[in-house]
View 1 (cartoon, helix red, strand yellow):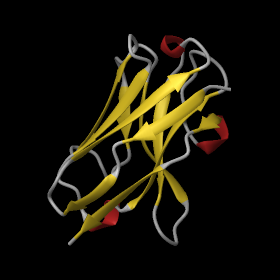
View 2: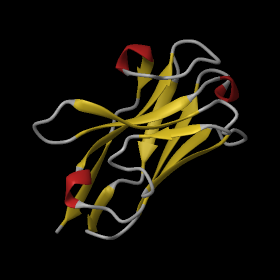
View 3: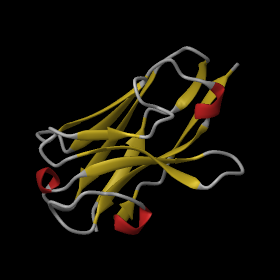
Length: 125
């Protein structure tokens, strides 16, 4: 498994922005796709965004499309989630995740092998 450490969460007003970072260690970062999931209070954990190992293809949940941007820096073994125009419904614990095999796409939680500890994002109205 890879070790994942998130940072960058916090409290922000609606309409504001935050950037989450996830530092990975323990295997060749550039061989693996990465993704972000989140769990809001009282809700199931859900997919937010994913990015391919080469950074060329991304996918977003409908709820964050056009507001969030996932990116990665393979030289720094880090994946980012830029969150803009934040809404109170974006309040959740955000998790950085990685799959078990290289060159595979994360389509759901069943594909996830490693989870970060999570970082809290709170959006006030």
